[in-house]
Structure formats: structure tokens, C-alpha cells
Image (cartoon, helix red, strand yellow):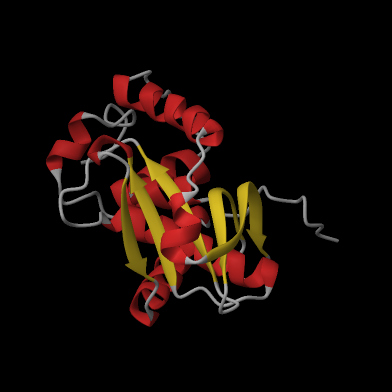
Length: 199
């Protein structure tokens, strides 16, 4: 019988980010079980340092600006319904009884939110709703390289439906479906599976 700790077949935000990068990435890593070898690039390491920094940082202005009444940091989440798992940087609880995930990015804000970020925050929203039995209408992203700019993302029905559709396709790949390669050849140049991938 499956327990809450049987996470081997649960999907994390990192898994879905790799899925968005290229669906074949998931095929090689999750279906064929060929491990990836992550290079210690500058931004990757800086991103990890950021997570250490933000835990020590006190963002009291959020309580005033967003009417936050409670905040939890580095919360482990899961959803049995959607088979999701992850650790969210912060969960903000509001006066109206709703909640929101907040994530820190070592990046600049260029007046738009990447689809990978939208996917990640929508996953957190579903997990928060199931774990805490609250509604999630919005998510927040703090862009470290834009002077800690706080950006709001509405968790719409369209984002939810898109995520559920992608989760279904993800499961098909893990079950053995060989997907087409990414439409961006530039992504292939930096992929750890490029030498074994059938173009």
C-alpha cells in the first residue's frame, strides 16, 4: 500500500521544468533511467546561494503590502490527487483565508514570466490547496537581480488545465512513449543527452 513517503513516481517542479525544456529529456532520464550530469554553471551555483540567502532575509514588507497574516518557509508539499511533490520557498497566508506560494529567482524580470515559472507556481498552488485545504488564486515571484522585484502571477483555470494536460503527457513518456524532440535546436547544443538522442 502506498504511503505519503512513496514519492518515487511523484512529479516535482524540477521534473516539469525539464519536461518543458525537452520532452525527450524526461524519456532518457525517467524511462530509460540514464542519469544527467549537471554542470556547476555560475547561475546554478548563484541560485543555490540565493536560497541560502533568502532563508536568512526578513521580508517584513510583504506582510504590510500583501496583508499577510502568516508565513511558512521551505515547506515540503505533496498532492496525492495529482501525484506531485516539491518544496516551496514560502507560503503566504492572507486575511481572506486564501494562500499563495512565493518563490525566489536569481534572475532579472524582463516584463514577462517564463512558462516554466508559471508551471512551477501552478504546481505549488495545487499542492498548497490540497495540503492546507485553502484556495490559491495568486502566486508571487521575487526577482533577485531586479532589486528583489515582487511580481504577481494569477493562477487561472487556463494555467491549471495546461498543467494537468502536461502532467498526463509526462506520465505517457514515463510509461514508454518516445516523444518528438524540441523545436529549438539551440536547446540540443546544451543538452547532456545530445550524443545519444535520435535527431
